[in-house]
Image (cartoon, rainbow, N blue to C red; front, top):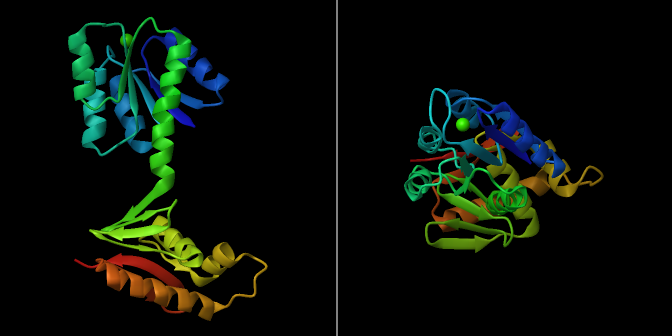
Amino acid sequence: MHILIVEDEPRLAETLRELMLEQRYQADIVYDGADGIDYGITNQYDLIILDVMLPKIDGFQVARQLRLSHISTPILMLTARDEVSSKISGLDCGADDYMTKPFDSGELMARVRALTRRRGEVLSNIVSVGDLSLDCTSRTLTCGNRAVQLGFKEFDIMRLLMLSAPSVVTKESLITKVWGVESDAEDNNVEVYISFLRKKLTYLDSHVYVSTIRKVGYSLVHTQ
Ligand code: CA
């Protein structure tokens, strides 16, 4: 778990980091709003703890800017201000939760766990590329209002292609990851499953198709 702390009071920032470390969460600290935006956009965090009163750019603006940049990382706002109005603007600008200082560390950690759990479920269950989404729990591939369930091998292959898209996945890497290093599966085993997947994509009427890169492997490509 990787957390960004945006807090200009060094002692409080350090206390927060220690609380996170006790839960084995790794935390980065930045001390102003500009760095908050910069770090939030360029790194993948599981949660951002964001103070409101910050040098350069305030916490509300930081949250708004991150959401405008399509960063969906959960944001927990932390502030000395306890008026109802600042709570509303905090949630309005894209924060997911809100706590006022001084905070109780037990309550803070409970909220951190709740926010990161929600995130984890979303991340692990659904993979999307173009108009396709793959539910990794039910192995269901959906496009618009059509859905098909994939077999185990089809699912493993599709998931790898989707996670790598638009990059090419080599046949070798598919064999190793789907059939295992020790298996005697061959290129034509892969080809058979790719043809199953292509039929399913045709049935789904998806704009995404499996492109063959001769003698190398496959990649997922969009048509318009
Ligand atoms: Ca502050």
